[in-house]
Image (cartoon, rainbow, N blue to C red; front, side):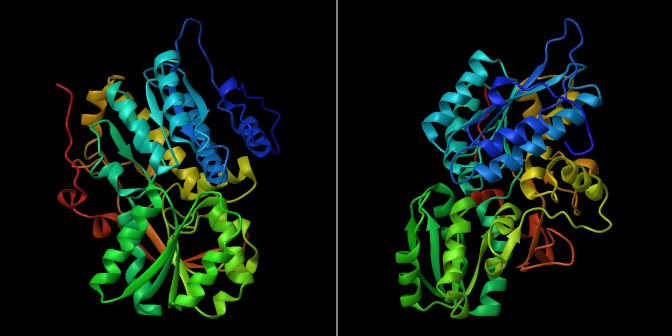
Length: 417
């Protein structure tokens, strides 16, 4: 850490495969003070630290580790130190399930956070529900997580795909038109986003076509040629992480930015940083933004992330931070680690300002356990007046204004006897 000689203990599970991840994990490992005889409260984090989502998973890890350090400075959970155990799901459902079972059964974690990959998040939720472990989905967006596949023990910090698409779709229609082409990752998240967009477009009298793209695809030329032939008004880029970076680079290289607009549900700061200036284009939803003048505690959090990473805080940093802080606050409030009791207490729970870091008082909705946050709708810019000022917020939208009703999500919570 720049300007600090402090050394942090590193749990063996934080020694991850990627060199960049190893460096960041070493820098941001939680500072754990263990009093003699105390048993730590363990939180398990399962995320894809290898593969196309490694950068955004690492962003969540940085925020989570910072939160653990903050919680420990304030006395931990129930007077006990907090320990974060980190596992790499490797962007694979089977691996994610296996790592989750290991964390719960062998390592005796009290809580689970994860996964960035929506398909993995749904799969590990079956394990956490069976084991009656409170589970925060930090970064998996697909609607069923707090919809048709919802569970009594699962709460979600990031938005549902319906919320993200509802927030930006009308802007894309009004600015650019009603003929769209989708570039969509072929798994749960991508299917959910495209379905949400298509529902809105169809209601507006529009038309669409698209391509389903395997994760980790390096060459998008065939898909972009198909998009060009369709001649849409907007290319809806649903790709995420490294896939979005690669596809947007090639979109601009092929000159398609001169022929059609581009936009979508998300263009995260990690990805905005990774593309060349010319590929910082399009209209998107940002789920948290570091520049919120007048909003309490945002500047302090951003400064803390800059100290740790050398760059502005990202939405993924906040996802990890808010997930850990939610668990700590509710456990200390209820004075228990019991999953059922804590899940009941989280229904309707409003994040305090020092955790919310946004306007409009975000809260966990009782009927489906989806956080109702603020959404930041705007457009990417090649370069801003200060570093990382690469997104212009045009509108702040209340989550309650764009979230489907609980009935519409299909969520029916079934509690343990």
